[in-house]
Image 1 (cartoon, rainbow, N blue to C red):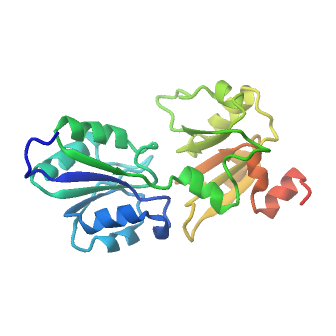
Image 2 (image 1 turned 90 degrees about the vertical axis):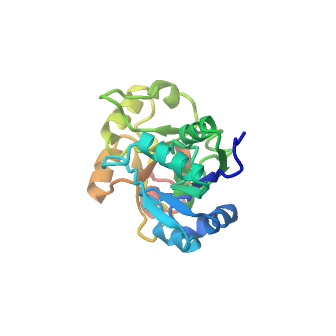
Image 3 (image 1 turned 120 degrees about the vertical axis):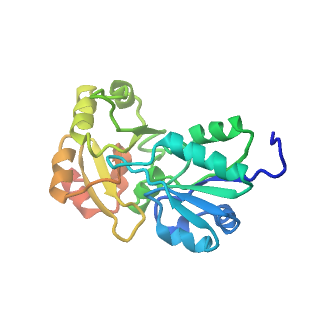
Length: 255
């Protein structure tokens, strides 16, 4: 509960996968009301057209690059809201899916500040969709597992054996740097070498690129295609539905 009516509020907003037209109407309304926008690095700058009145503060966070420390962002949100300002924390994708939005929400609650969470379309669903890949399908997959491929201190970070045996589509965020390790771990866990996979860079944007391959060949295919972060990796039979002739050829699937 807010201790003072003079306090502002903070919106934790998911900006979506990149295409500015995939922003929600609720997010647009919050941006129009913002006094200040704390902007993540992966957010499309075109979205700032909805907040011409707001002060914009870059707090870029991108894997593998120098980023604003999370504790500094937390303190900034609290300080601005305590000054009575309406703050928008604009984050790529969805704020609660690998976006540290949960941590920020708890920090704001602890400070007695009002926090409004506005969901966004996550790239783990949007990027495959752009290729005609549904992450679930009654014939190919009964579920989907969203995981991070960002490894800490050389550890694999995930129970790849359990994931390989789950029968679900795997959607891997932040996995490009450790692609060879991820592929090796999944193969060692018993996943078929010919399991269809896709890597999608800049999903939903005009510069989107992708490669489709098999699990065993994915690291080499990604290297040959020159793909890099930010990218989503999709592993599972649903990739067979991709609108991609190179996949059909590589897997010898009849059209």
